[in-house]
Image (cartoon, rainbow, N blue to C red; front, side, top):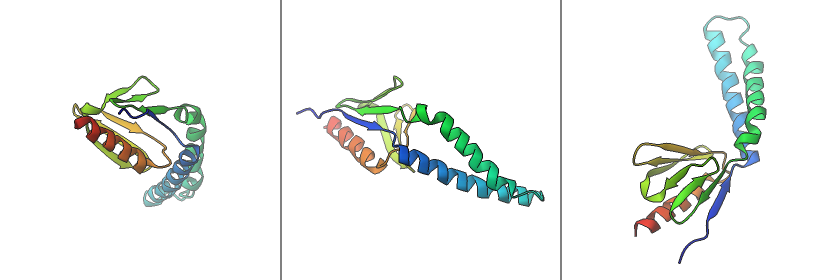
Length: 133
């Protein structure tokens, strides 16, 4: 019996959370580097990093949140025309709120901003083991 295709989209709340986390880490890192270099205006990092991430997040949101991945019986299809045959997948792993799919040829695909990346990883691995049997 064939499984129905499953669709996975980026999650807006996860997208925003990831950008907030990156901006906090960036702000701290920038402040530390400026302080280490002896810059008396080290505090600029507290403003610059979050502003940069906010601009990036706003600018790319419509593109990133529109991405869609479909898991079928034989492959993973991306909304940008990507196709990954399940038989070609060597490894699947979680990276933060993303799932990375690595093919036998070394191609790497990142399915980003998922609310439950562990669930997608489990579904892909389940399809792979089902396709192998």
